[in-house]
View 1 (cartoon, rainbow, N blue to C red):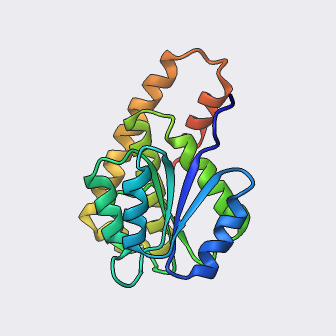
View 2 (view 1 turned 90 degrees about the vertical axis):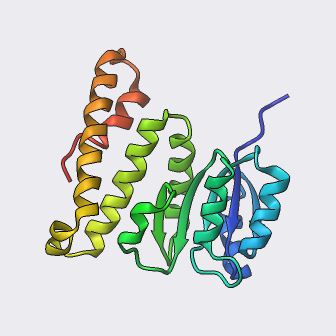
Length: 195
């Protein structure tokens, strides 16, 4: 018996868009759709141990994506989450428990690459997952905020310090592992460049 493909939950209040995302991903993954926050939580109640990744719209009527995300993390559901939203990021994203953030519109390739990255992140330990998540947040803020806004923000400075600390630990871990593991090496190459 072969192992089932990973399960992706698409949470989007625009049914046509949710169905489009599901169609883009359906060849490689099992996909479920939820057309709102409450429906997403209902689906998670039914299959929380099965869900590997969630693509989550941030602004939805009723129960927002932010509230769904908080519930997912409070319940201890062990899956990766990407916000896929038209909401431009602000410093509030630093406190949110997502792993990646995409600003709509997104292409099918971007969506597939994001899901692939989320699933790959799920394979690595907690500190490396935190490094992925924080690096993604830092990159998003740097693309949207001015250098002076970043320099003046204490939370951003703490983020930068934490990333440096995690990179140092990751480098130490990498050095302790045999260098012939190409996937492992590729993972850390993404963090070797200074942002």
